[in-house]
Image (tube, rainbow, N blue to C red):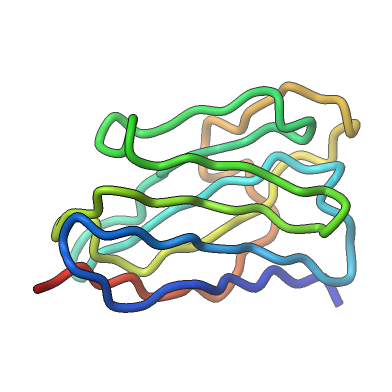
Length: 129
């Protein structure tokens, strides 16, 4: 069964940090671009970041640039989202998703939510004092 599982969410004070993990089972992430999304109550799901299958290309939403860093360890079949300088407005359920089925060296980034084939169940991030 193909599955993505997020972990690492929790409650953190403003200015704090969290690292989210996205682990795959049933398939290898080497062949997929991986995106991070978030959805706050009453709001639409929004893209946060995407990393290519190779790890050599990334993009970020303007709201998180300079604070969040996406990375991947294909040997561990895991993608990470390091979140620093967290703000209250970062509070949301965070999801990872896999897109593409491309070659391991691909620099391609998904640009539309419809390009994502597999989704995790989400992990809650709450930023509050």
